[in-house]
View 1 (cartoon, rainbow, N blue to C red):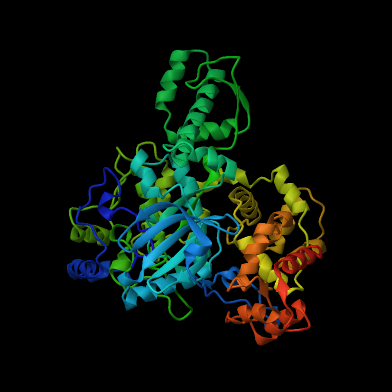
View 2 (tube, one colour):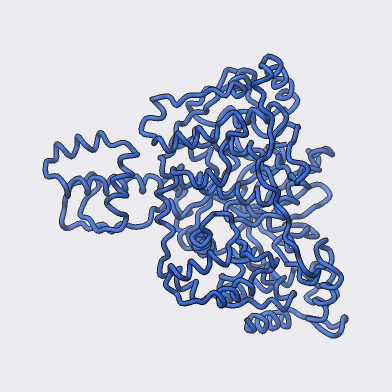
Length: 626
């Protein structure tokens, strides 16, 4: 059920890329695809059907010494809300409408947070689809990653299911490609690096996405509220596309300036510029450096009165978000392969069509995505679904000269490794992240002065109060300052050298050393131990963000009022320790001992009433104990 949990307003598969030659009858009909795939398989030699077999080592859950030490995570604050969602949210605008429901841009009436609300009509859901919706909700509750869409809360009414998600109002990659046909290589590099990081995280969580495609990759802008408000005044503005155009102009300025400084003959300069492909442009930029002052006008003409300062590419203000986990699978140590139909045919791997696949099918889809973004075409196309299926099962494709002119050898090599027919020879996620295609992004690992300040100011987090942990988790998970979150994400990426989204004591100690901040190993141990909620010896992304957001930004009146409603579900204006403990107890990973601990933290009397102002004062007092 790959399309059910999309944005509902996505176009059909046969309207994906302007120049892609694939059938207009292209659909997601499961029964139709099943018969077509069986038909194609029946004509394929048996030795060409490579079955999946996981090479990943078993991922064991961390051992926790005591039930009272169980961590409180983001999944503990994503709840099914009671009542009518439109009492809590007001509609700003309707974003789209599809077969299964509607999507709205909404504002939270308590804290003014802007969200996306997906309304799924129950009359469209049979028993199977209802289970798929439930499965997706449960999967999203397990995830907290910068490149995966967030689920904040959900409502179940008599006739609909409402999901309150993160809003990505820049649209999806499919919509972007319709405007510019294909992306410059350095944009593809940034996008694919983020996708691979998200897949690395999903594999650690033992999750197969199962339906990676352009429509399921949204674009998020990390500008602050003022910048977004300014952009929204221009109805025709497309920030992502304009950023790409700006960056390409910026690159051309640097190349032209580089040539101008080295050579005096303008005719010679123009001849060389015409011969420079994207790879040579990138090499020239890297060799000359990314931080220099130059004199130039757009087009490369020298003018001493115009001085342009180089700066971060504007595209760095954007990130991707994976959505639609309706096709996702949870694998275990004993259950690693699956045999049902998932995904969208043109992105499907041979082993998915052969009905015996594992997490490597997502790597194949990455190869299709990368091929498509660089060329504007798909590697496997045909007049109908049967022909597409046969071509995928053959595993044969080519890098045609017209569409891949100027694409680097490194890019084509990574695509080839992702589209290996034999799943045992296909590149693994960690290998993909270390591929030389991403080498020129390594300069971004250097610590800025702002990074050093954040590292220097790391404080020990109060682990004693489980109630404080609970509210802090809720506040940090619902934090809506995207610009600050983007800065913290970049810092975490710099610290996490092996990109496994598990920051070790060794990595943190090395970071302090590189940043020239005096910290002993014992002091680093204390920092890690104070924020390592699950006691596995590493700092996960969620723990890092929870620690680094300034408390004055978290503990505002608006945010605390919203956190109060986490327990005051009936909106009475008061809560009791019993209600708080009951909320905790509703989650399976919380023990009765921890329930009692939280009750004792709030009050010695289970019947004591806590009003909103009491709650705010309590939380601020607890935050001062750090």
